Length: 389
Image 1: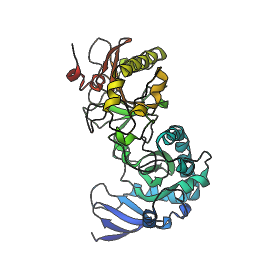
Image 2: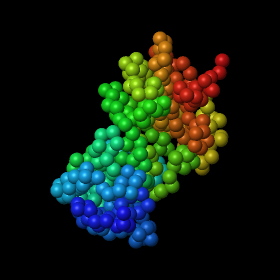
Image 3: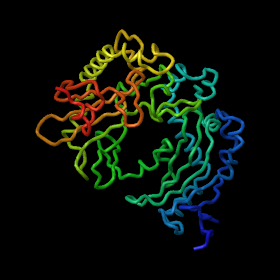
């Protein structure tokens, strides 16, 4: 096969390592990115939007585009500006969901002079167009389990420190995600009435994984101090380094290979996140905080230990220094009650880097708190290592 080919729909394609490349016309976004907080040197590196790189995947093999990719591209071209209006609408909707937590973060640790520019209160398509700029777009190989073809546009945005992908399928916008989620979202999905969309690979022994908004924890965010002093995932940037969807918690459901969550696991989740259970969990977390606060304040490595570990008089203050990082639904492997593990993360919980024992764990079972302290107590795969008599 020659280095370059001319496709009947996609035009002239050049082979580059493991995919085809061509140029897509996205003149609709001309003049975008005016509010991006980039240096003049970085801004000069941006390519003209009307000549955006289009990557055409080929399934890790050097072969011509699939007919389903051609059909997907035809739908995109046919919709024209109406599709790009829909892309901006999706970005506006996502931005509105994220803005409250990000404003809280910026007021605590950001540059107030940039706040109005990066996180404007009034937002519409025209404003959003100035807050984003596309970097490249990708026509993916047909999804192996469904045969569908996803097309994504990757944007740099004002309000988030990493790139953002907008996904299109069958000519319609389907999702706005952090760019790093591309591999995760291609795992086989299961639609659970209780947990929403959860994913894991076929025959995998790993738990099902999804994200959920769990009240009232969806309003919690450790915003009192710059995250670089305690968050190992922090990315230095002038924009907010909160997680992409900071209001959502990772949920892991442990079950045998190829088996969905059981009704007992769903019931355990409902009970552990009910209003009475939530009051007990937050109360216990506050008491634990009071026990460790003095020591954590002394050992805090950032410049303002009093802000990172404030002297709280009631549980309400936890919401500005703590996040519900993960929730673990233990296996349904016996007649006894099923545990649910809460894994909290924040400026007062320490940070030992990747796979370190950072955080505070609470294990709930049979209507009460069973353990609290070490984050491993909340994880079915690790809790026995942290158990104490």
